[in-house]
Each structure stands twice: as structure tokens, then as C-alpha cells.
Length: 126
Image (cartoon, rainbow, N blue to C red; front, side):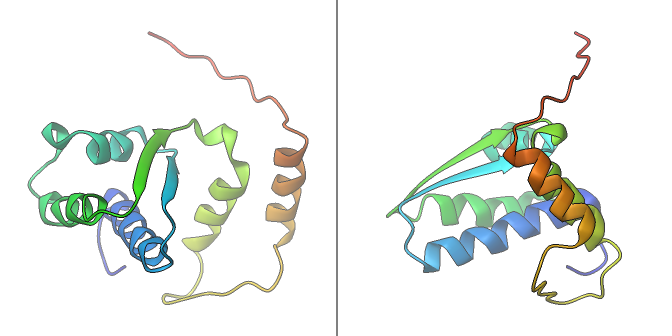
């Protein structure tokens, strides 16, 4: 992804994933994010900042290119421990494409927790 902010990395990763899904001709896609900021930027062009605008414009063009439906949803990080563990692991891996033949221990544990639908309490202040 190069040297950039975590926000830009997340937007780039979503864009790459969307291109892959589009090439597979998948008609409906749900994009689940644990970043409220990124989810907001993908759903609402008024929250864009200048640094991310070119990439976000490319995202919007891809979404509206037709032939599919994409829904972006924000979820708390606790609702998908697997994705959170993989993302944290990704920061320590070599750059490029890393293929895992089986889930590492921490990820395997998170898969088990996700499968039994463990409830993770969270205090939300308004």
C-alpha cells in the first residue's frame, strides 16, 4: 500500500477488494467496516478531505459502474474479532501479498469466538 495513513490504507484496501469482487461479477456485496470515519466517507461525499478525494472518486465511479449493488455498513470492532486480529497481524507482515494456508492461533481462537456469537459489552457515551 506504500507509505500512507491508516485511513488511506483502509480506503485502498476496500478499493482493491471492490475491483476483485467486480471482476468476479458478484451482483450484491455488503462491505462491513469497523472504521466509522471510513464508512462515513464511503457513504457521504461531504465528509471527504482533499487528501483522499481522488481515491474516493475512483471508489464512487467503481460503485456506480453498474451491474451490482454495494452496501457499506459500520460495525463495532468487537463484532468481528477475526478481521481485527488479521488487520493487526498485517502490520507486522512483509509487504506484498501474504497467503496463509491456515489461520494462525490468535485468529483460530477468534473464529471460534465469532462462531459461538459471543457478546462483547461496549459502553457508548452520547
